[in-house]
Amino acid sequence: RKEVEQDPGPFNVPEGATVAFNCTYSNSASQSFFWYRQDCRKEPKLLMSVYSSGNEDGRFTAQLNRASQYISLLIRDSKLSDSATYLCVVSLNQGGKLIFGQGTELSVKP
Amino acid sequence: GAVVSQHPSRVICKSGTSVKIECRSLDFQATTMFWYRQFPKQSLMLMATSNEGSKATYEQGVEKDKFLINHASLTLSTLTVTSAHPEDSSFYICSAQGQLNYGYTFGSGTRLTVV
Image (cartoon, each protein chain N blue to C red):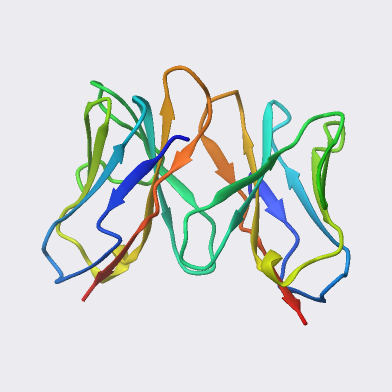
């Protein structure tokens, strides 16, 4: 079983749509959780950290369910510029090595 | 903010040659450097973790004699792919962590093609 598993993609959505990504992780001892975004042939960029209480940043909402070992990312009112691959990332401890999911590709169409 | 400069961004080399990739932290001291590899349509896979002045810790399945990592200073870490083969063609990327915080700063990546 992979340490971090994500929804298979790609997701093709029209502008303005709401899209949700899911992720599960296998190690219950994981402590830190993130969503990264990666554009084609570029380095990953931190989108947001994920906290137990859930957190929101503009159109992006992240949720964490430790009991189910499940992380989600919701994007509302999607823009063309949201097209990218979204990576679910966990770490066993703060500042430790990052474990990446395989990523989910999002394509937002006009 | 923190910046990591990674060079070269792209390199093509012949089979059997060695390639060195550099990552420099420009405005902070990188006490820890993580080196990743990413094959097309796959995720980033950690190859090794290095701490300044210490030997790198390699992940299972990564040959330490083939992927030489040096982290001799707090601002520079290098990855050398020795005796490169076509199957080593990949996107290599570093991620630096400073002494005072646990944030991760990624380099811009190196696309290696071995012909």
